[in-house]
Length: 186
Image 1 (cartoon, rainbow, N blue to C red):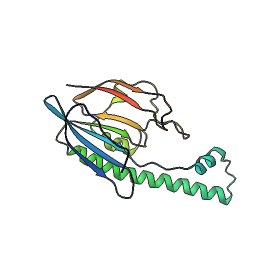
Image 2 (cartoon, rainbow, N blue to C red):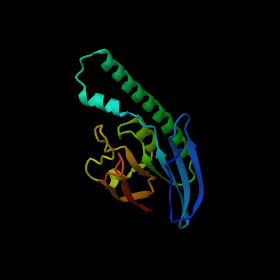
Image 3 (cartoon, helix red, strand yellow):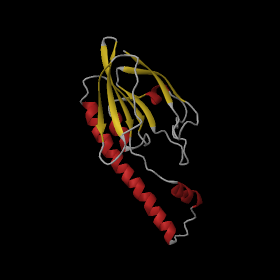
Image 4 (cartoon, rainbow, N blue to C red):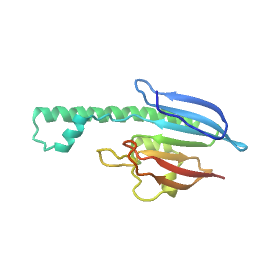
């Protein structure tokens, strides 16, 4: 696991990792003392499809003449999609169970690598609110790569927390646009 961190100007009183088998993806959680309360922040990076340049070039040039090379490339892409969906579903189930067992109100954020209509999103969101739905606007796409642009990065939160501001920042730092949210505690 690498590349995930949670920073806080408030005291961190506990932290941990939800690791997943056979992948570099992970979820971390951090318990933060906020005034007299404690909140748990989950930070996710879930399974990617891992399409390479060859796959993107193929998708850009597809004419479906059904030759053997095209069929093999379609099989490879289909297998990558299937494997990523299965791994993300398992990852989402583990995170959902952990969230349900949290003794504190939660904030869940990160790269889900899946759309708002997916099993992954619904499984993790379950009883949480979506900051974009509450205070965002527009299409909200967060993926800027070569595939169609979707919203795959999220800030979800406990019902006792309100989202008062949500913004996606259009910048070329990676194939994802960063998101910013301001949350208010009841």
